[in-house]
Image (cartoon, rainbow, N blue to C red; front, side, top):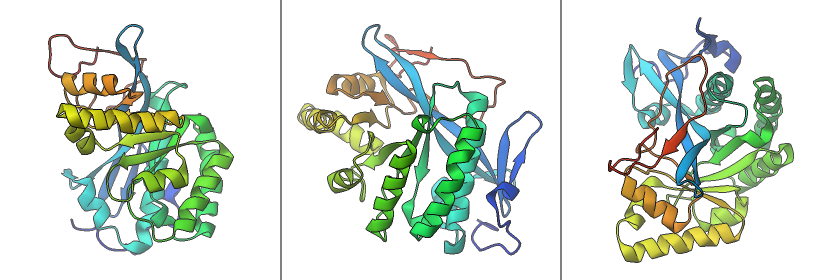
Length: 287
């Protein structure tokens, strides 16, 4: 990846200077030679009364292009130099926040990733959070409708993570533990951050859902979280069978390509969508 793997001389000091609003209203970001766009993947809540799903919110994901070619996200983020980690972290958040209400109604929640390692110190964290809260309100996102996903990476300083959680709690945003079952996203971290939502990693979910004995383990894990008033989201739902297993095991929320693929489409206004369980297609169907 050329142009995105070095600290760029002349990079804007402020994230706002790396953002541009297009004529149709969409905000895009620029980092070196890379164009960054918001892609949203819907998160659904199951309604057992009529056996259907409703939009709960959407996760903001970044789509990166260089010279009109897509760059895999893991490759892009792996090559961001250390001095620019916080800048790119905040740039992604700013994109998703600015674009969200242009696509989704006021009651929908925005999920955004937070990497506490990018902040390096509580001073940086304080500065960015003091800036973040007025920004989300200015873009019509109430704090309870912002879900901060604590990613699965190991943290260099546990105290920084604990401080981040305490600050987020103070301002009233929701906290999710992302990719449970991967790396440091485990029961210990769950006990430290006490999240509102646990997102079970998609690969872990599909493995546990594949056979009856492991489905019982999946149901037990879900029950542990729910007994502590933590909502559970199954990631990586790709088929109708997986969707049904997730429901049977007691999940509250679902996300995955079988329900909705991340989209950068920018309609005039996103209307509420009901997602119906397909009775004749192996894939979960958006209706």
